Image (tube, rainbow over all chains, first blue to last red; front, side, top):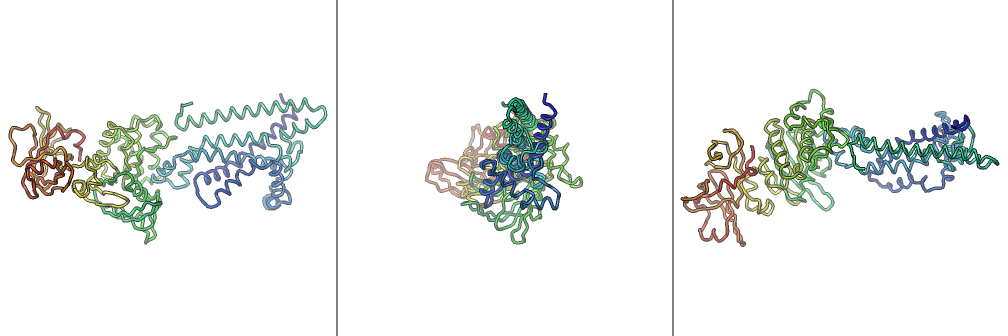
Length: 232
Length: 362
């Protein structure tokens, strides 16, 4: 069983990952829908932009976040002045970094599932009197649910493992921004900390496996409620 | 009343269609690629013509000059697609009620219970679409469209993805709702059989424009439209009334303006309207009334036109009473009988050639 300090680290990691996923879900669905369905000039640019965190070194993303959302950053100062939202050196910053790093994975999964929906189903729904928004909520969203679940879990798993962007953006502050990977890194750097690092690594393995099992279970459930696709 | 006059460019294809039609069932007939589906999409509002107007029952759905373009959800046209397209995540009942729930209670004229009974859907309500047969799916799709309280039902090849027994099952249901609900239907098909069995008025589409529109028997019977209506399938349609049943021989006598037809047993009551399609190749000609013949139907007719054709086969246009009747004979027979226009002849039609599939309920 994890000790008190270890438990704190695990809870913080889960909190950071969960908050990151929850707040990126709506924008991810929006961008996935736009990329899957709309055709407009600059679509390739938008696509590239969304995928950027996937291909950039995480440290670069963290540095960019520091410049943009740091206390004196363009958005950071503005958000702090007007809404009192501070990212720099807070766990919220870690959540932001996690969300950004997981975003491309989430968008990709959701986009694929939206693209797989027969557009004529949406057309039928429109001719049956459904407004654009209602059709999206009652047809597109439920049919894309397997992709949304997969995307959310991918992003969650990615967030649990986030290291580079987090440590660059919000540093490694115990109790505030020290998530599992950061804590493991700290112990590895400390003489005689190997045993601690190993323990935390085992917890990380357990969490990852739990996330995978949850993903499998959720996908199966949403598939079942979608129409009993029993082919497996 | 359907009044359509639109122009639309779709890639290289140009749709330029104008017609007016008034009928319980208007057939849109044409080969694949003739622009049927493009026209239906323009009607439904899922694509936008660059010029023209679409007026249905005095309601303007689209008018480029007046800047009217109702979105699909405001047009209230029940669109039934080829393959049903039921919502896979909803059960049959939720599918059926999807459109109904968007309609204010005061505007609900078509009642769910009635539609469920009419289309025989009661036992399917709790099922999910992928547990239904093709015919069942299509029936649910039709019911779903009906319950959205449409001013018109738009059916785009609703039988195309079904096998023959399912086709006649669904056809029977469509005939029933036409008689029961009095809802106008635009029926799109490339199958002459379906069009002639169901439609009253037909619009013939070819290469993106309406070549002809009018009563089914008139348009489909025209020799000059043969390249578009098809040679093999050519025939004539008679609107008839059941006059008598011969229980001993299992035959039914049908009466039409100017004569009677004897056909194998029709399951309809005396006095009911029945539509018969007579294929041109099932009609033989004689100059005098023949005797000692197994053919039951011998109809006096006037020869109206003979198509001047080179091949072995000649199409002949007749008139029986006031009804046009097409006959198809060999060029040799036409020559040997010295057929000419205006001549009095006898049309011979074997009763057995008028099978179940050529007799529909009008």
